[in-house]
Length: 171
Ligand SMILES: [Cu+2]
Figure 1 (cartoon, rainbow, N blue to C red):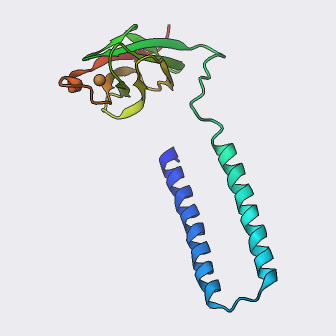
Figure 2 (cartoon, protein in one colour; figure 1 turned 135 degrees about the vertical axis):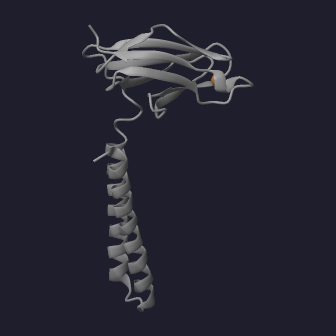
Figure 3 (tube, rainbow, N blue to C red; figure 1 turned 30 degrees about the vertical axis):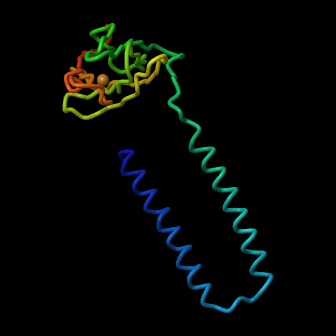
């Protein structure tokens, strides 16, 4: 299942759970309050919910921000530098099927380093910010020509700020 549909299904299920709580809360509010024992159950339930929330958040946020995992195994590094209004790239060919680490820099203003596949779908992006080197890692699964675009409006020729590189099997 593609990750987006997975996320959609999970979101819908969780929304249904939340809706269920609202419905039961509205129903409960119609009954007369029976007093202290209910209160204790409610308090325990809230703390349990809080604990589950903290655990789920901690576990699910572990892989972020994007870990640079290329330290073990073959990888490639590409340096890209944005400037008004072009992208400079230090290699024309990037290997297929291995982690490729892009170091995004800028010499002037903030640019958005975005990479599009041959069908003009955005694969990944990061900002190129003055004074920083932003890293983004990607494993290319399809050989071909990929296009670099600018994702952050940066002036009159922003739209023309493109470049290309080729992904091919490493020899
Ligand atoms: Cu730009």
